[in-house]
Image (cartoon, rainbow, N blue to C red; front, top):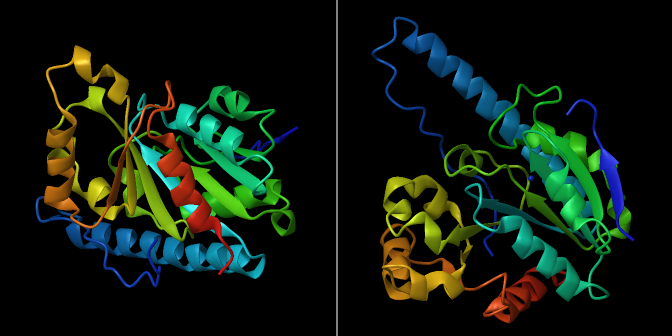
Length: 253
């Protein structure tokens, strides 16, 4: 049985984290300079805590994956199928991020994983993403020495989650065909950041005015190197390729 843990007060490429954060154009604000200084301090604190998280993972022989998507993409369904498929192969911990409720965490219960629920409405201001300090708090709900793989299910959002390093070793994304083929161009930061992308709900393609190749070409425009896996979490089509990717990712280094 999985272990469920609630917090009352509240993530393959080598990740050296040497990128710079783009704080945008604040010239329209009288407090523009102060706003930039605040953002720089926030990201600096986050990046420092992310390194602490990464050290905690690596000192326990854990590989960590940040799993992102928009709301309704099927991310939790993908994760449920993943836990079923990998049961007995890897000891998995889940940091389950959501603004409110334990609905997604409950769907993942009983599948052999440790689960640490992190509601951002509890002590974190209802943030629409997870950051490194939040994930650091959530790690208290996991028995790290007993784990091989930690999957951080980020809050459903196509904007903010990609901007925060949470200590992961790779980023993955679930992108549903029902979201439309234009999303990679509208939200390039998210799509550009990922190592692997699951193009989900391909079983619905016959009912949509769309084709898989168009979706893939849009992703390639912003992220030529991403591994793209067309899947249906509902029917299981294509999911074995995702499981194999995870097996390779989670293999001890």
